[in-house]
Length: 326
Image (cartoon, rainbow, N blue to C red):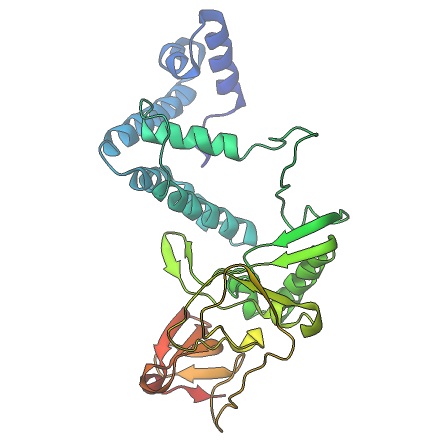
């Protein structure tokens, strides 16, 4: 009720709770009835909140679920509230809100009698709970890398190792931030007692947008003799070069579930003189300075992915980008 701050303090909430218990009513009902127990300023703030909720209810009628969620997040003031927080915490909160919209886009309610938004929020509450499995049940423990410190498990899965995700986009251009994420990746790897699985997605939807990412540079830092590649059956129509992977991409159909040793599987083609390389700093006439993240394609179809200091990450046609090496 009071996030962002709306002038609804702890005293107002105490009055609402007391009224609800005494009259066996919900706090929403009590908010319309307990004006006599509150000061004029508290009543005004409370009425403004009630009006906001009723307005959001009317404005979201008939909208697809993800548009309802997005509209409520924007109109409630949450986005503006976290944008004022210049620290990493505010940015992380905004990313969580964007992911909430993405989750709502793909949600299919099982209970068709419940309003979609209510069904989605109920599902989200259940899925975010801890200790969903009993102690005797086989289950997967999901946790952040920070919370995994000091723990060990027979098998560990590190998911989402893509440049821009881990390491995070905001750390790629920051030497100290990149080193901190590298240390954190090492912490995650050393949680595994017997087996470590490291995964990345070639295509990922984030914040409602489909992205084609490159494997994390941290994968390339694992000694080749310790790595075994596992891929599903896949047919790649043209070579896709990810310089930081240190391995050739699959150019032929492979049996599903096959395990392929990565040892010795290096790029066969040497880059021509003057060619761009991963991590190289470049300058674009419009977008400014940046760093090369990935290259793909050949000839007229060659593309380069660059993270620019001011413009963010962009894919450019190499033949027309006129990038200047720095």
